[in-house]
Image (tube, rainbow, N blue to C red; front, side, top):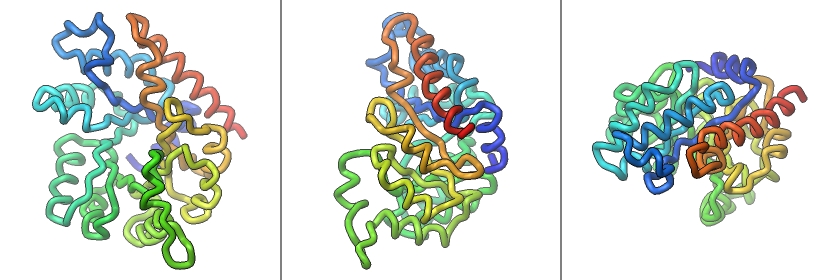
Length: 269
């Protein structure tokens, strides 16, 4: 998917919501536990309930890999069910030397046909470039994540007191462009979005951390939106686990609608 196509979807749906499919077997409602494939049955219901309110889905690969071959089958069925107009992210956080990264890129962009994959940058250019070689595919580079541990390394000052994540963002813009490179920036750091936009004014930002992690969507939108959207804001647990019973999909839709309406107001300005 191109940046233009993604922006068109944002405009059409008045939303830059990404729904994270972090589907844990022990959180699937009881009435679905006896389905042939409970993971897919749950994901299918979530997709049906939210597909008109979001522009992207983000399966977290750990939740599927941990189940072995059945998990990969559930993932394949989920990917086939997601409507083609949605931007689909492999939340895989890969990052290794060139040949290994090349195989990871082939896995996610050819075998599974994701639009994007999250990539760890800390092995440098040769670990990232193989992902950037695929046309109309995206690298989403980990920059400033939403977890508490982001303070340990990402915020560590470098020369001129520049935090490490800023150095990563500046350097990586030599590798990719706003057409194929995004950054993960956690919603739990709203005070940094204005400076981040000065560093990367045109790039899309994938923003986790609203909902269950307590990130501030209003602040993220105020400082993160740009002329072509520039944001994909992810909510996982806050949407997919909004309900626990047979009405879980309706509860998920209500939670997604609340977020979408706030995004619509932000887009209108």
